[in-house]
Length: 145
Image (cartoon, rainbow, N blue to C red; front, side, top):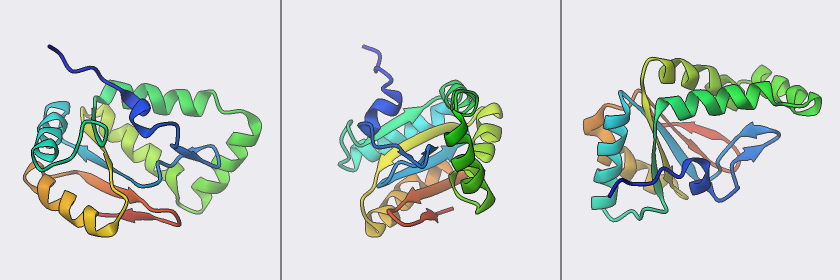
């Protein structure tokens, strides 16, 4: 039976801050392809993570989600996004994620409440050579690779 793609549903509605995608307590990892993301997900599941904690995301979903977020933003949201982009937070990552997605990257959303857990996840995904990994902590985005 084919696995059902959950998209942002895995984040349980806790995925924005100031109108910008900001999934606190999660890692986003960009891998070379959707197949690599699926392999990464299998490795994390084998290491004890649950289906509710890990989601492989195809590039077409990322492209559509980013484009929808930028096109559908109201005036107040656009102002907040501009401020966020000006100080180098999540809006700046959108551009890079969009570029990687258009190159065919696959993505992983991984629940990761602690820095210690982030180190474990990095080790588990090392063989997939992530193009980019970042963890959304409460006060900052931590660049992992």
